[in-house]
Length: 168
Image 1 (tube, rainbow, N blue to C red):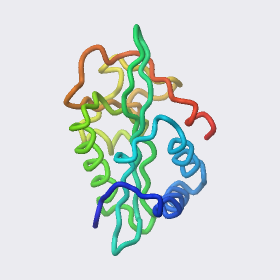
Image 2 (cartoon, rainbow, N blue to C red):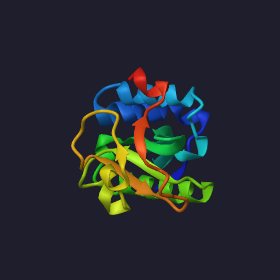
Image 3 (tube, one colour):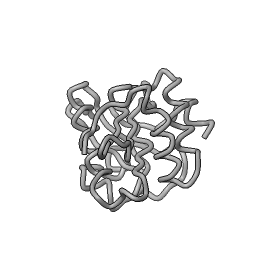
Image 4 (tube, helix red, strand yellow):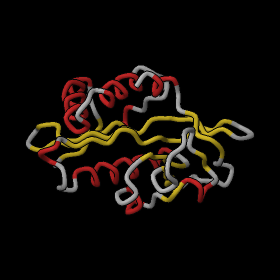
């Protein structure tokens, strides 16, 4: 398996992986909307390839954390693996690769709305532990935060997703 940053040529395959993984086009549309926004980070849109075929995708992009000041942090969404390649560790490798690339960039934290049995293995904890509030009502154990190397206590407040997230 090879993990690398996406290229323009990967866009159709990424859309297909997201559509197959989620059984709908919403996440593929989300990726497209984020790519056309100022929140897109090309080096943090990663694909997993097996035998030259795109089988997985993960996207980290900027979202806002609002309290006394507005701070940009990373949002992880979506993470998708083609159904026939799921349960083989590809999603885990994509999360690990993304986190490894985010730290040297000087990012402070990653926020995810995700499965409470999957993300904690990578150091994600309920957002309430960091005084980070979800913008919508969800169970505490599914809205999580992973502090990175440049995390500071000032990173707290309410998450505000950018307009790119609204259309999906």
